[in-house]
Length: 176
Image (cartoon, rainbow, N blue to C red; front, side, top):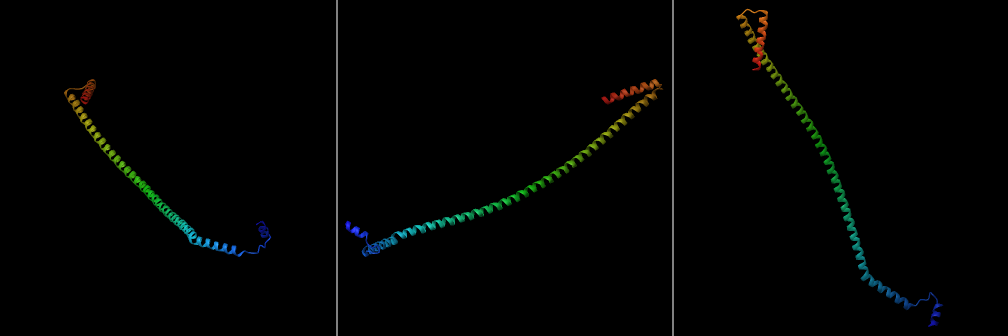
């Protein structure tokens, strides 16, 4: 055997042993056939399944992105509408407040004017009553003085005493 190895080592590399070559090709074709029938379909099915799964995930991700973009647009529109509505509400509240303030101011001014007019009427009535009272007392005083004058002749001292006495009567009549 050593001899055959040494002889084989010096052999021509182009020299082919046909039996080994045919056996190798047949084994390769059998392996390839078995692999093509049993292994490749499973590998291709697994790859196709993975490809479909990846495509489905991509489609779902794209749909989710589109939904998120639509939702964002919807929220932005709703936010814009809410801002417009809030601004309108603020403007309306300001207008209502200004209107209420004007109304309250006008009402207060009317009430103040009414109170002034009532106070003037009351003051005038009190003044007229006071004037009537003074005139009444003056008439009573004049009558009293005249009746005393008619009863006697008055000297300057009597006149002075008469005035003092009448004033005292008048003061006591007012206090009582």
